[in-house]
Length: 168
Image (cartoon, rainbow, N blue to C red; front, top):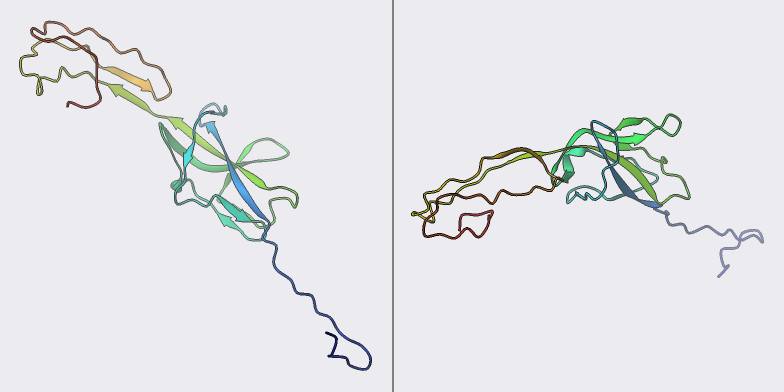
């Protein structure tokens, strides 16, 4: 309806809505020592933003990221487009993500946790089990496949069935 005519001219005003230009964060995990990619791990980021908008800064911190079996070390990084080196990152700056891009890659340096596996004859549950269990396995990496020792000696009245993660 052009009823707001002034001197034979009608002015039309654009009705605009901000295009959020959203993007997703893509996490790439690298070994903190070697720099090699680590595949097959997933971050838990329950309190972490999984996306941002291209026109605003997105603050990021490694404190909100946990990866089972690994420690997040040294913060978060972006890859320098020219040198290929990883550079410290505390935010994805506004307008960093290109107009035709829909994701931004954040590199996370990880150190694999090491565990000690100890054996317990479980005599608290089996009072008559008087034998001995194998010695502990130390420095077992989280991703390693470990063959458990099935040697249990001198356990009269009991048949060894295997190992369990709880005493009951």
